[in-house]
Image (cartoon, rainbow, N blue to C red; front, side, top):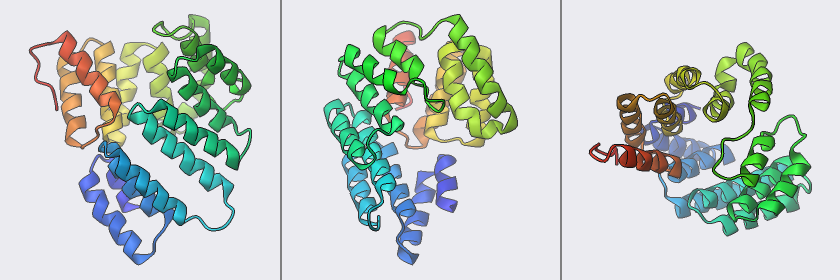
Amino acid sequence: MRADIAVQRGRPGEARPLYEQAMALHPTLAARYGLAQIAWQAGRYDEALLGLDDCEALVFGDDPTNRLWLDLQRGLVELSRGHNEAALAHYHDAEGHVPGHWLVREHVAEATARLRRRDEAIALYADVVAHPATGARGRARRARRPGRRRGGRGAARSRRRGLRAPAGAVPEAAAGHALHHLLDYGDPQQAVALAEANAALRPNGEALTLLARAYRQAGRPQDRRAALQRAAATGWALPERAEEEARLAVSEPSAVRPG
């Protein structure tokens, strides 16, 4: 648990020995996944995949839910490095553990959309779009109309209303989902306020990259650069940070990139 907290605080160097100590005391899937997660977030994808194999060796008996989850993680690792076909293969493996699971179907649809098979992706999203736990509706629109703003104002207002209840009751639990929604559909100033609160709670590379994106949309370039520098300092090296840095380089060629 101390290692998990260190990861959320953006301190993978502090988390790693704690996970290793936990594994030495009693090997568990959670501790081994923590080590795999550190490798993944640093962009060491092969090491992360090997870690997920080690995690599977710690799954006892016929445990389809955990095996499904591990195949989803493998797919996400491959998606992070742009290996969309490999990601799709892992998602199909996940389907074999729990056939028809809506979350797996959503991941299959996402990988299919990335492979530019848009009509097929939209049909897949149609299978899961009505599930209350998914955000598939917006992604289905994106698959249909790549490059355009996702959704209309009515849909955005409806989704904002849906987010208010959980965000008001337990704001720290809903912050990540609500922030993605605001960045896609909402007011930039509201997105900045939530991104700042999210980064204050869990100053990891992902939260700081989302903060940089919020600052970009709000027209705050100095704060954006500072957030990206903080994200780089955590060692978080997934494509979202690189994308924000590339946007910064285009908009401000003289700016020093975070790394």
